[in-house]
Image 1 (tube, rainbow, N blue to C red):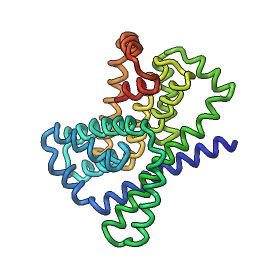
Image 2 (spheres, helix red, strand yellow; image 1 turned 60 degrees about the vertical axis):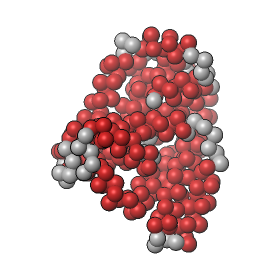
Image 3 (cartoon, rainbow, N blue to C red; image 1 turned 135 degrees about the horizontal axis):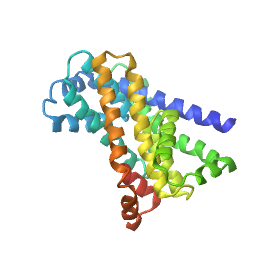
Image 4 (spheres, rainbow, N blue to C red; image 1 turned 135 degrees about the vertical axis):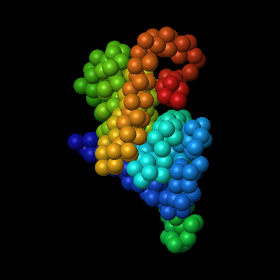
Length: 280
């Protein structure tokens, strides 16, 4: 029970950290972000790049989805560049997953420490708000570590090991479980990092890990669609289009899974690196 409570509290901390980063970035750069996303994306490659950059700033493709759906709902942006931004947001999340595989245990306390100093000493200034963003980033990094740490004892339980052993590479079943991972953790990033950890520990095979990663991406699409449920019909179409992209990716990869796994196995990479590489 305590392990489950630790996992839920880590997820709550991740959600709160995401909220702090999003609100802090919007307070400091809100008008500039809105200008980038709503006016300078007439060309789809630019929109794609904007999606990568904004997601790297706010640390969440779900947060980018909230911004984009609101802009489309207000008539500030057309649907095609909005969908290009969502694709860029997915790439931005995958890049952050690669960055977070490095040893960043020192970064979280540093960001929180400096963020608190700047926020309390210069609260009404831009530096103070950037300190608030630093606090949020530190909390997100800490939350991702806590999610993986809290989930590790669960994965060591006999029943869970039996469940993982029963996963033999059925892509649809694995994708369903991966989607549940993303929904429960409220983050495809956390779900992918957890999958990489499981693969690195030898608890799941590479085909199963690939299925979980695909499912985690579909789960993030579901999250974006659910959070956009209160938007206008135009805003909901953006989230629906993003979800359809992810489902299309699942359909495309099904016939390619076996040769893809064989090629990845031929690379001299660790299992966790293979999972992150496939995600990217």
